[in-house]
Image (cartoon, rainbow, N blue to C red):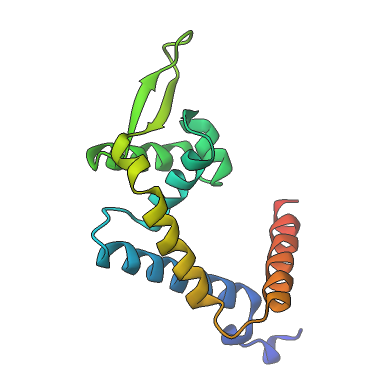
Amino acid sequence: MNKESYKLDDSLGYRLFHASRLMMNRLNHHFKNNNYPLTYEQWQIMSRLYEKDGQTQNQLAIQNERDQASVSRLIDNMIKRELVKRVPHITDRRINLIYLTEYGKDIQLELEKLAQQTINDASEGLTEEELATCLSTLNKIRCNLRK
């Protein structure tokens, strides 16, 4: 593509970023309107803990492709909101495991419904095949950029 034909609005990066930002904003909106003290970034941590409770901050950082410092800040805020707690590792006190609180566990189904609603909002008008193709294409893009 030559320089004259490049249009930001038509670029892959811009469209991916814009769609991602809109989805994050929509999910944040759903959480706020339903009185859940949660952001999209915190939702990512909660989702990983719903899959496997009691992970290290490092494991959560790797899974969410974030640096440890930002995950630590997210967890600090989630502790203040009584969503998660840090528990020292049984054999290695230098390591903290992150667990859901009872409140964090209790709201799982409602949060998942709101996340699914956001996905439904974003995929409105797409066939199952189009959505599957979209997800497959996004996975290929992620793999290409990890090289």
